[in-house]
Length: 184
Ligand SMILES: [Zn+2]
Image 1 (cartoon, rainbow, N blue to C red):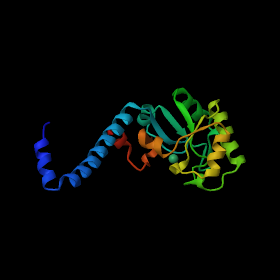
Image 2: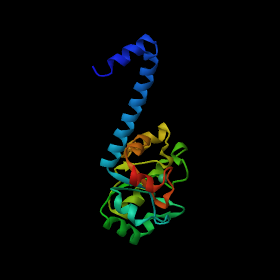
Image 3: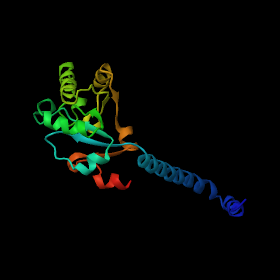
Image 4: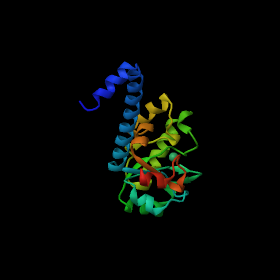
């Protein structure tokens, strides 16, 4: 085999084992990164933090397949913005529920059934559909809240989903800038 003589020589020098372990990890990481870039390139794109009170570049909304909507951000309920709702519906994208008020990592704290039902009701009023997917702000939720989300038959999307997809953010507030997701 090609390179076997070099390998034999390394064995003789007792450096083979050490180097080969190192290399295996290195190549494993490289292959993982290539797979990740490939998955992200082929997969659906998303945009987080869609709200009538957050500026959002239309170009990124157009590129996204899934829009993650905050139902009641900064005291602006989507239910009271029928014009905005109409504009979003007309874009013909898949819509998901993104938190309740998006108050930092609110789903790590105490979220009541009433809050959850208000968020779902606002979503229904706005888009004439029931949310089937949920993504928590900061991608963090407690066990109790995860149970609550599942009670309303919503699929949970967390950190893993975020890593394997290109996810833009309205107002470019993501950990990585929107342009990064365009490229990788
Ligand atoms: Zn968010």
